[in-house]
Length: 303
Image 1 (tube, one colour):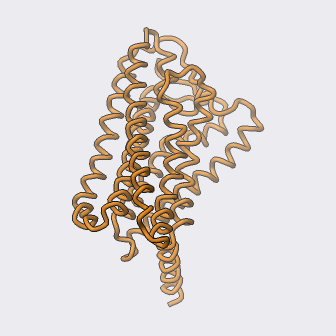
Image 2 (tube, helix red, strand yellow):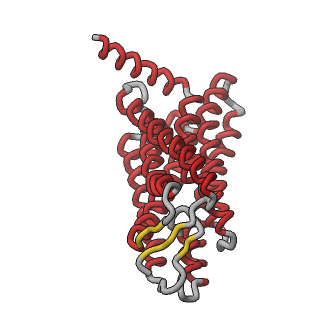
Image 3 (cartoon, helix red, strand yellow):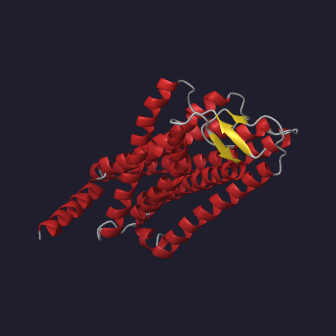
């Protein structure tokens, strides 16, 4: 097999045109929103805490993650023949798992940061140094890379000799396993163990850290409790939106691909689009930094 045919989200022409406009708008919001967060964090002296350092990297990963699948999907809405080369397919598979897994690790690191900030505030500056934060981010990237290489190598070892139609809008492990001309059950088990275990373990760490945080908040003042909950609230919302669909897709051997591709829209498009909105709307520091950046820009243009 030299190329694959992607069926996309829908085969209805009218639906495809509507989806083209909708997903193009979504993708513009993803890139613009996340770029705005990156620029705001980099250019503001006030947003120099580890929380914003991690948020900056999360926004960068979100842009990369959605860029692996969204541009191809948007272009495919306008063409009859939705083909992707074998190499392009494997590259897309690698990108989706690399950036997706890196995002999972980053969200876990951000939960750890919130745990230290709220439960061990006196040790916060000594534990969350610039070097420690850098190592945590580097660890997230390396973890994502190792996971993705494992998934990609397992898939490329399979023989593809027959049908080449993928009932999805991007190349993922489950659809490719169904097309292989060999018994893919052992590989399927490894794939589910690899993806599912990472998602489940990280989700367990996240839930545990937030349970500990909520228990420790009882002893704090009402004002301290409100501030802590507002920063954690954004993070919990993102975690639920991302981990829910992700775990649903990868924790079980896939049987219904049309169901999987509808769920995949959540973690490849919707969550990266909502992340900037969730983090900025609930965060006064980010909003005021954005206003300052905007007024400075307008002031310099007038000057």
